[in-house]
Structures are given as C-alpha cells and as structure tokens.
Length: 385
Image (cartoon, rainbow, N blue to C red; front, side, top):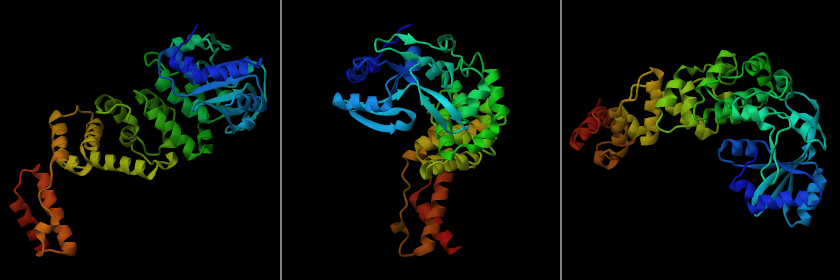
C-alpha cells in the first residue's frame, strides 16, 4: 500500500527524511499521520521514527541547518524544525519497565520492536518517504475494517499506560466502524483495569475527554464507558442518556463543551479552564431552567442559546422546535430599550439595579413586546415595593 498527501510531499518533511536517510539511517513516518492518510482524513502532525539515536539526530539536524529541540530526549524524541514546521523524530524503542503511567525504554534498531510497544494496531503503521506503507504487526486489515484493537494482549497494553483506557474509547469514536461496535476484548480489559484511571492526572483525563467528545458521534463510546463503569470514574454523577439525542440535534456538531454539559456530572477530574467550566455550568443551568428561548438569546447570545435549547430538547428526547430557535435569535438581536439614565434621579444604587432587573424580566417574558414606558413604570413600581 502507498499513501500520499501534501504533508508527506512537503519540502520541509522531505528534507527531514533526507537528513536521516542520507546519513544511512532509516526514517519512517509513523502513527497518526500514516493512519489518517490511509483513511483519507486530515493530517495535523508529522511524526517520524528512526534507528538513529537522539544525539545523532541532533547532530544531523544541526549539520543540515535545521533547528533541533530535545523535547523528550530521555525517551528518544527530538523535535526537528524545518521551514517553521515541527517534526517529532523518535528513535525506535522497546519498553524495559512500565508502571502504568511512565515507561523506561531502551533504544532499538528494529521497527517491529518499536511497533510492539504502541497501543493499537492501526497506530502501528509506518511509511517511507515515498509513501510505501510498512506494517510490522498486520494492522492494515484492522484499519481498512475500521476496527480498533489493542496490540497483543489488551490487559498488558493497558497495564503499561492506564491512559490507554481513555484512548481506547476516544479512538473508537473517531476511527471505529459503528456498525461493528466496540471491540469486546478491549472493552473487557478496560473495565477490569478501571482502578488505573485513579492514577492519571486531571490534565491527561481532561485532554482525552475533550477529544472523545469532539468526535462526530461520541455517543456509542461514551455509552460503552458507562456500561463498563468507567464514565463515573472520570465524570461522577454523569448521565449519558441525552448524548445520542443531542448529537443529532445540536446546531454545531463536535462542540465538546455542549456534549459535556449534556452529560452533567462533576467535572473536577477534567481540570477545565475557568472559561470552559463557566460555559458548561451556564449551558446546563439554562437547559434545565425554565427561561424562554427569547430570554436565553438575550442572556447568552444566539450561539449559546441554541446550544442550551439543543441540550434541553435532548434531555427530554424531543426534537428541536424551529420556533424556539428563531425566538433565541430574536432575543439575541433585540436591544433592551431601558437604561439606567431613564430611571434617574428617581432611583439610584441598589434600587436602580433592582428596578432594571424587574423591567428586563418583564421584557424577556413578553419576548420584547412591551413599551419603554411600561418598562419604566415596572422598574419604578418594583423599587417602591
């Protein structure tokens, strides 16, 4: 099999290949770039594997006038920058010892040994500079069938790195064939090793969950996580029932924060940014609340109001109402006609704030169909009461 693509034929990438092969070393593209190219999917990052030792890669890069950064030199990884494009170049390796989070590696000259330490068969594919695919472990049939399987014994692969539990569900969501379902042996091994998730950092868990929920349809994988007792380990209190409905309702596919809000639960183990956490809380509160679509549009803006309405519909398994979506747009576009200046000097301080809030509540309740004079009267009356 041959692969092709702009990423492979790009001059900077070919320069890095030539830097290694010209010195008598083997150089192979590896992992996600090969997998995605073979599937016709976009390629984001270019990783290379080589039999050259890290210090040799550094020396060759510098001799070629390329920037070399020892980003993971203890594990054999050098980032070689050619024409501003980073290429992670990693020496063939084999695991000497693992503890479920970290590995002690020894460098190798054998691509098959390097392949055997990877996670899934479809990720253990390599390619020459001309696109010739190298398949040391027979992963191509799995790739063509869109079947995600661990390399060798699933339990052994998971024991090497417990993050592979989450990667199993994430890669299944992205690359598995939903008609075939999830790999039963892999699922059983993940369920049995669930305690290992407690050893992972929140950053690593959050990274994988973000990417899982950004898949076109993460619902089957998330449901499998729940059935295996794993979803509650990373998202306590979550409920996946609404997710399959939401995937077909949401106005912006692959918006992972919307999916996370629909799941609910405690996000502490995901280490969200403050902005992400606020978004998830606001969406879920809006979806579970009783505010009208117009009010949501006014409060959240058109995009987030539509998201909240999609979650609300999914939670009760009903279709989206186009009229509600239009009302949310109207609320976002409308301008509240009353200002603080309209209530002064009669009102000031807290009374002014309370009056404006009461007037805005009325305006939202009537979808903007209320006069400015009536809003002013409501504000003044609320302040007096």
